[in-house]
Length: 243
Image 1 (cartoon, rainbow, N blue to C red):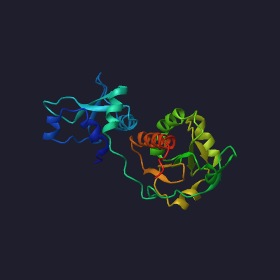
Image 2: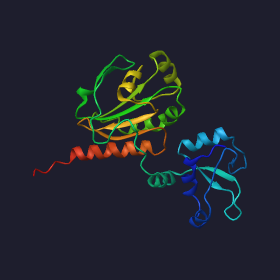
Image 3: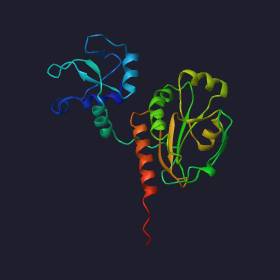
Image 4: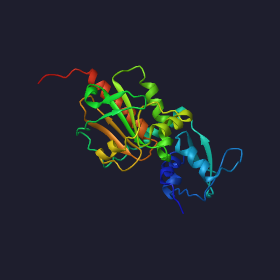
């Protein structure tokens, strides 16, 4: 039986505190999930909705708890409140915060040359992924929102290093836009960095130092990428006081 630990917190945030103190909420693939109209959602559908971070669950009854839940869409304020409570994602085993990211040269799918050494002074937001990776695909819409937010800044660069070849990527991107600069056949870069888990997200500061990194999927990762970018931009604006 599959337990869904990533959902425990989400449900907890929407239940009364005294109930939670009495009994932990356990949601499994056998749990009954329905909408407010009573329509029952299949497991694969409601889990996909939950992974977007736009929905939450609440028990059908707090007085007589059953393994039944109502799925509902969160308001913007509810989403913000939820993300504030989410802890910082666990760091990946592939990088060390405060240490240099490393350098590489590559060519993107549009034949533009990329050289990390030439990007000093910019914040680099780097994603390692591949097409047949469900969690990689799940996080793309939220990553695209980050690109949109910083689109007018030339000091923030988004690079997605894909394992796939150019043809497969172009076919995928026709129906699944990913607005990072896409590097094809980047398996050698992932290997060079020792990356074995996907997706892996990294934020590198203006001096080439790793400031955030996480692997796997978490709804909080895009938020922490955003927080890190904002912090680095603000830090660059603040003049250093000579000692």
